[in-house]
Image (cartoon, rainbow, N blue to C red; front, side, top):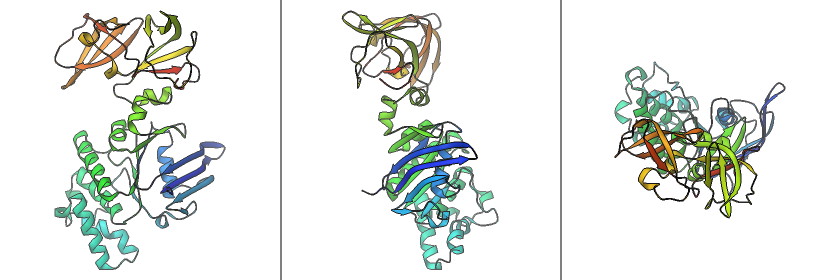
Length: 363
């Protein structure tokens, strides 16, 4: 199947500085791809290159089987939603939705049908006669999305569209965008620094850092099997716990030893051989740690000292002093823990990660 969007050997430079080099990316028809990463990683630069808002230094951008590397944004067959709503304040919602079509010379009947369809999909029909100043932030963002929808494009680009909204509105609109994709089945490329948005919306996530894609995979694979230390540390809230040490021989097998801990690595899934003496970083997510009663009697169980507890409603986050380091554990909120309590815990190596201490890639 021919990709809906194909990025081939893309390079973007400003003077002598390469901000992106030899980037390859294929996005399949109907796919929801999220470009995820911290500020300055290149995700918005890549989106703008797809949109034609910045010039590329080398390489090609293909959309729907056409080389659009040097095509104007209006000729690329895309719809774009920006972080700022960018609505015309003097126009009604209906006029904002139809403005681009009117400028392009579309027939009035076609414009009316497209506006009505977008308003129905986004449930903004009662708002069509209002002006942006009379709308809430969430309503304005729906209008901004609707302005992209009326273009009836094959590819929609979203540049952090929810970052200006409060937490409740972000959750609500996140659900609406997911439903919108399921209904339209168009290709969508979505930029965000919010990992929750990425994990909940994406068919695949491209985790970016330093102008390069660190890992491109489905959300569960990225969460459970991060390709390198950067991806492991960036994905997850609270963050993955890390312990620095080395592999040693213990009890006829291998164990991780470091920072006052010695943990058997039996059950760890590796794509290559592990060897004693290898310097590694052990990573384990707070929710993947058998804790208290669940850890009692397990091989390799250790004891941690509670430093503080953060009740979070359905569960709690407990911070522990363990060996020479600290770690966080997510557990049921059914029992309270107090500073100084000593609690058993274990490491589930089937869900843990080991990284090479030098190259920082997953072992």
